[in-house]
Image (tube, rainbow, N blue to C red):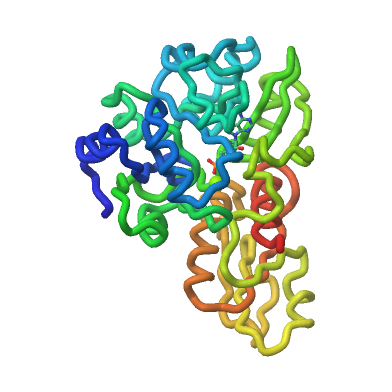
Length: 316
Ligand code: AMP
Ligand code: MG
C-alpha cells in the first residue's frame, strides 16, 4: 500500500511495524531503533544476514549526540557541511544503540536524509529510524515507491516520488584524524576531499561484513548483466539472446541484434545518470531481456560510484 499519510506511517512504526520510506538516495525499509523486534523484522523482510549492520536515520544533530559516544572533529565538520545529505558516518555508538542494529560492532552508521517528507516523519517521531535499502537482499535498489511495492506488497510505503540522487550514501569511517571511504556513494570523493583533504580508500578492504554494500554481488537484476566500455564488442559474441543495452548518454552505434537501447542520461551528466540508474535496470529487467549490456562510465566523480554499482550488479 502506497500512502502520502504521514500519521498513518507513524502509527505503523509506533506499533513496531516495518514501513517503506523515501530518501534522496534510495527507498528504505524502516523501523524504530529502540524496538529490537521491529529491527529483527527488517532483517527477515529483506532476507538480509544479521551480520550486515543498518544505517540509523536522524532528524537533528542533537539526536545524533545521544546515539554516539564520540563525534570526532572531522566527522562533525563533514556532518555540518553535508547533512542533510547522502553521507553516512561510522561513529562509536552510545549505549542507546542496540547491538542488533550494528551487528554487535561498537560503531554505528548514522545519517540525516535529505528528503522533506521523511524529515517531516522523523520530526513527528520520538525515535530515529533504522533503515537499509528497501530491496530483497542483493536485488536492484528501489528508487520509486512502486519498486518497493513490487518487492513487498504487504508493507505500507510512504510516497516520496523518484529519489533525487538515486544511489546509496557514501560511507565514511574515522581513525584518529584520518577519514576513510568504505563505500562509494552519491557524494563523490572529490567533494569530500575539497573539505577535509586526502581521504583513505578502504572500499576494497576484505572485511566485507563491515559494509555489505561492498560484497561482490549486489544490486542485481534477475537476468545476466555485463559492463563494458565497448557494448557492441561484447554483443558480437552473443547469440540467440534478447539483449538490452544501457548506454551512458547516446546510442553510439545501433545494431539490429539489440532489442532495446536505453539511454541513461541524455544530458551526459553523472547526476542524471545516478538518478536514473536503478530505474533503468528495473525497466530493462521488466522488459524480459535475457542479457543487459551496460556501457561503463568515465571513472571519476559520480562515474566511479555508478561503475561500482554496475560492477556489483554484474558479479556472478
Ligand atoms: P544499505 O542501507 O542496504 O545500503 O546498507 C547499509 C550500509 O551501511 C551497509 O553497507 C552497512 O554495512 C553499512 N554499515 C552500517 N553500520 C556499519 C558499521 N558500524 N560499520 C561499517 N559499515 C556499516
Ligand atoms: Mg542495500
